[in-house]
Length: 351
Ligand code: DP6
Image (tube, rainbow, N blue to C red; front, top):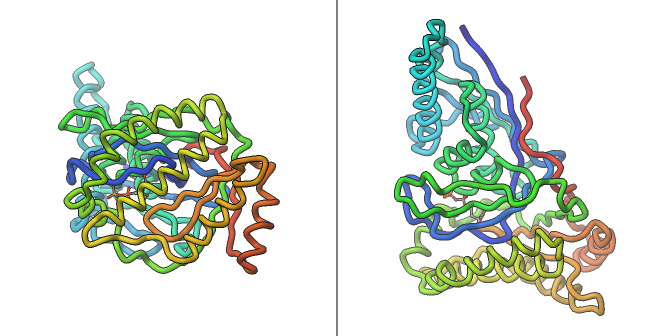
């Protein structure tokens, strides 16, 4: 018996940033976060997973290149948890008197994953990658679990991956429990809630970042005093405020919180010792331009946010996108901007 499942999953970009872990192994964060899931039209990971009695070990290929599964605790976390749940499910079916339960949990798995976006886009592919891998494994094993349950497993692959399991606006609730069973993603509003908002990605640099998110946030937790203020006071307040702004479709409030949170995340990086600087001069110019753009009579018309790298993601109402691209193109004559429609897709399954 053998079987193959192919799934796709979207990228998400945080507006309240996750930065810091309280448990490195279970990937439990020091603060809650919130993101927008981008449409899969231009950015998605697609993963096929299969099992077969002929496979002799778990194997995974990433964009055509084989990864050593035995050396990646994160990949093993996802494989072993989905396999454990499958074996629990098989036992429960047998207990109910089902004597012909397929023992899928005993087979090895092969997985192949590709991103349809160039690495040059500088986007964290681990979020869509692990979300897709876990979702595909859950479908392969026919697990009767919720999407939030799946998000908890994806979290143990890469923290931000838990948010890519849902479309629309998604919160990752940090949780309080030591075992991480309450640290999961929840959908705040579906992709249909606020379709007027779009995202533009400005590729400032396609160079690989010098400090990975994983090691950067580790040093921040050890050394930044500002982080303590951020996680105890600022983020809990901002989470409430941005959820309210999303519910009310209040773009000005949403945009202001988004830009302030990006600024504070990068301030925390600079407060890390030795300091981490993800923004470069072009990123700073983008911040300056957007600040000027937002200081006209109409007030805030667009919001920038930067992850652990120099590339900008700009959120703006559809009505402002053309003007915004013209404005940016005027200052950066050959912009490598990549407008991407926003929201429509949660996860897809191809069988
Ligand atoms: C700046 O999820 O890539 O993009 O959990 O160690 O895999 P690990 O880190 P990762 O960190 C993402 C950090 C961020 C902010 C965010 O997406 O919330």
